[in-house]
Amino acid sequence: MNTYRDIFKWGDKRETPIDSGTFKIIKEKFGYAEPDLQVKHLFGNQEVKLGSQCQLEKSIIKKLAEIVGSENIKDDDFSRASHAHGKFYAELLKLRKGEILSPPDLVIYPRSEEDIIQILEVCNINKIAITPVGGRSSVTCGVETPNKGISLDLTKHLNKVLEVNTINSTSTVQSGMFGPAFENYLNNFGEGFTCGHFPQSFEYSTVGGWVAAKGAGQASTGYGKIEHMVLSLKVITPSGIIETKTYPASAQGWDLHPIFIGSEGTLGVITRVTMKIHKHKPENTKYASFIFKNFDSAVNAMRIAMQSGIGLPHLFRISDPEESEIAFKSKNFDNTFADKFLNLLGYKSGNRCLMFVAVDGSKRYVNQVIKSIKEITKTQGAFFIGAGPTKKWLEQQYSSAYLRDPLMDLGIMTDTLETAVMWDNLIPLWNAVRNYLKSRKKTVVMVHISHVYENGANLYFTFLSPMQKGNELNDYHEYHKGIIETIQTHKGSLSHHHGVGKTLAPWMEKEIGSEALKLMQAIKNQLDPNGIMNPGNTLGLKP
Ligand SMILES: Cc1cc2nc3c(=O)[nH]c(=O)nc-3n(C[C@H](O)[C@H](O)[C@H](O)COP(=O)(O)OP(=O)(O)OC[C@H]3O[C@@H](n4cnc5c(N)ncnc54)[C@H](O)[C@@H]3O)c2cc1C
Image (cartoon, rainbow, N blue to C red):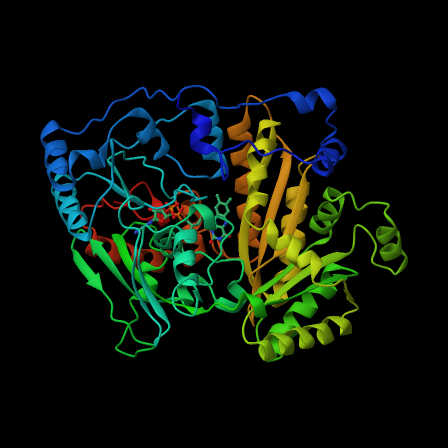
């Protein structure tokens, strides 16, 4: 039996147990008693059954089947339901409730670029919506299909590396390739390479999704965000094909890449991407971890490191006091000898902050960067706690997100929002958003910085709070709206790496201004005159 849980469950399909440290936190922070921990709220284990059938005309389905072969077209309930939503918290709630109001009519798995050209032709003539999808890990309703139509799934066939060029240090890859398959291929090619892009969703997201949603990996401080990695790409739009050439840099007028990187399926289907790759030398990677007395000094250390020309760490991360406290508590660190010792030294629980650093590259480079970071952190009063905590953190860099589902099972709202901010505004924004989040009773707010630049950084908010049972969606939407408004009022970007999708679209005009939105709309109208590409207000664009 195929259930809703099979669709929304993130990560390893086996159930993820909650560890004893986290249970303790749940009891302490939310006032849960033992019986509350046995409840399974909106577990979603009912069989998937859609109320509606595919509404496309038979003649159109026949044409599409002639293009891709009938084995690459699915109209069964489970295929359509599992392509109706991504992984935004509100979408997870809908799936748990078995409420899929607007599934795509068909799921199509194109075999080649030629198939995509023909599918787009049919859809353009007949004004049928198309939503290109990769891993469907979008957390902004990016893959939702409010206009139904076709969910174009690239993962089944367009999932190969087309070229690795070791002289240029580049790789051309089809967009439907998942992170681990791509990285594995590169690691084992020649002397070994890496793509350097490791979002927390790495295991279940694709190269095309990374580019289309303008993502960032956990090692982005060293390797860059996805827009810093793409050298060229190919996009099939309803109006024609755009393929950029591969150069290390160029000056032939406008750069077209930023139009498509972050286009979220609204302009066309990205079919292949040529990316920078890097030598893979994990044996050289060096790690360091630090504790600071407070968030200000940790942020200062990070900023100074980024502005001192010492070289770049790849992973560079600090957790604010509450996130650090939760990290310690979940490992049952409270009241241990080490905890008392740190408190005695002035690294007091509730104020202290953790910093994780990892540097890739040649032995000489990594030694130099780590040495400089140690010197800088010392000037900010940090205590060096060795390589171990960073290595431990890296071990769970993907699997920590598996906890969201069991927490939601316990009726705990579990979501994240992220933004980018200039250094001089980072602490005020952190305070403002935290204050707003904390205005909700019994809310745990954990914040970290994980993508760092010379001029500023991101802030990533994770919040946990008991759901209003029976009113989960309205309650969440109200709260979520307030968070975004607080971020915008306090000059944070609308998004740093999750993209905009349909979720943040209502705030786009305020973010970029009406003239800028008109320009985006003009580009959309040129490439997609019938508004078939990922319609439904994605990025604030109208059909
Ligand atoms: C637990 C979790 C952790 C996450 N952590 C991170 C993180 O650390 N960093 C980060 O950047 N993001 C993160 N995300 C968000 C998400 O994983 C990223 O946006 C990711 O890049 C999406 O890739 P995907 O293959 O799943 O794309 P999808 O979700 O399938 O699609 C995302 C958007 O891109 C469009 N699209 C997909 N493929 C194409 C294509 N070939 N051509 C045109 N448009 C296309 C879709 O229409 C949609 O609008 C996380 C999500 C989850 C659930």
